[in-house]
Length: 257
Image 1 (cartoon, rainbow, N blue to C red):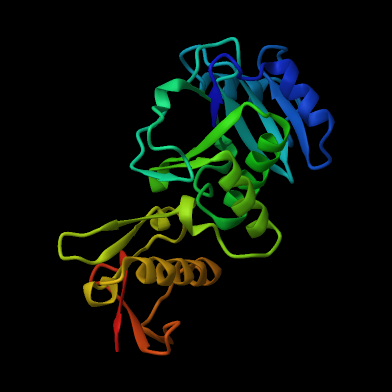
Image 2 (cartoon, rainbow, N blue to C red):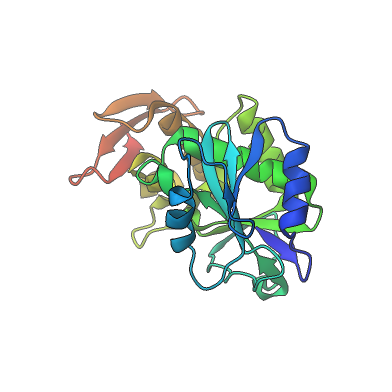
């Protein structure tokens, strides 16, 4: 999360935020030393968790719908380093990310190994959306798997639509890049399903149409969790397409049948 300079919330602001939430609570604050971890009856869990946060980062643990998330980089500690990004969505290209102070919301250590699963990602995005609703000084969100920075307004609208049952926010939580042979490849889809999508070059002559096709296919792949065998499908223009595995199963390649 990118905040206007000097506008990151502190522990008190986060406590007030969770006080207004039905699905979110403050499960652990290392400064107070009072853990309320699910399944932890003493300080052992708090000590283990505190040891995972080095460099004096101010942080708290939030419980959302039964899942634990760490919110790092609270004021008045130093802001976190902003990750490098290659893609911007509704975010002014003339603005340097160095203009902002960064905080980070990540799955807790208890979710290690499951942080890429769709239920965890949905919960993470839902919590981030509610933080955007609460804190007006959030300017944008960075999603490292897609190397993307997403404006606050675009994130709010696409996240809200997805959480309400709409399409997956493919522009932002994934991105696209052109390969050396003229194909179009997704970036960040592997984080979610273990595969990236490649739309073969003949289908990419019109980049706008190819992007629309990519968004549609990513939404389909997210819903089914990837594919295990070749599948045929119809393109929006009625032409026949086929999705195939690459030889190493890391890519789903789409071409005309």
